[in-house]
Image 1 (cartoon, rainbow, N blue to C red):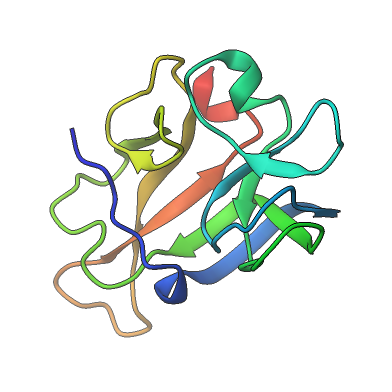
Image 2: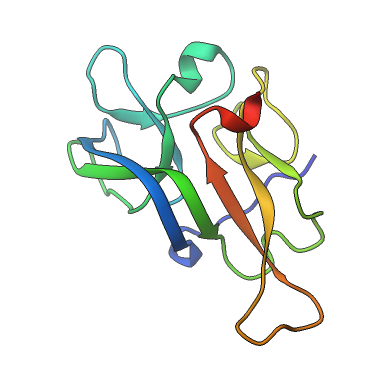
Length: 145
């Protein structure tokens, strides 16, 4: 089991293919956190993998930090994120990354299995001996099939 330790200031969008929002958040959130719409308030809330309802049908990765409630935030549904130096080191390319029961990104599924991305190779303009590792995000459910 490997929880990915992410520092929100190190999260960089490499490419955004699909986004949703903005919606206001229910509470403070960090850039890189997985969000879903709350079924009562219609605002973004942190997703966790304890139950299917806590994952939500529409979710994505917060593309900015919100310091408190009611701040509008857009989420990335599909795209590529660089999570910071060393975060994905040692992980195999094409390895699925799951949402866990605490809302963290993890190499092991939570109570309800929800793949949010895969470790993806990223080559620099000059091809080096080893590609960097980035996270291909797909919160549309396509990776769960």
